[in-house]
Image (cartoon, rainbow, N blue to C red; front, side):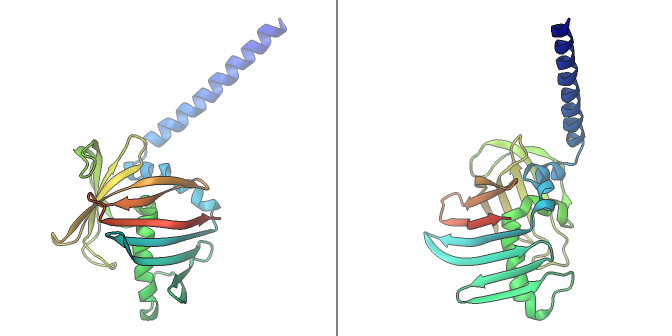
Length: 221
């Protein structure tokens, strides 16, 4: 009788857990695609993060052209840039002074590459319907959506991105398109690593690998 009771309780607990997982999966499945991409990359963990540090690097034909070290205190939105032998800091607000635009412009660019999946939640962008399309570099068929920014405001108004992602809502490639039919650039999203629940792609390469944008010295506290 005791064995039967234990078995019955185990079945009840198993089914209860299964029902809870099913409800959670259903709830997340009902979210918009951009929300699912952000969540898959650790958006919900941001509330427990105090500081993010990283170095933004760009190499052209194996020659490093850019190297910027960043420290971002999320509690008070204080951002520090260490570039060459100088350090500059500011508090990021809705209104940026002319004095701080130099550092802010670079932080916006570098952090977009670092945490673009979260920008889908933060930014005022138009997001297209999802379709199946062949990715530009791997030539694999993936889910694709286009993220378009308004034609006014920001440092690069009117820019757009074609995002190619897998079944787990993790970006694999993208195509950056400058406003007005300007230049386009396709790169990979690879070498993902988990930092306290935040998934970060550490390497982005062009098709011929002559362009490489990558992150080093990443820490999440």
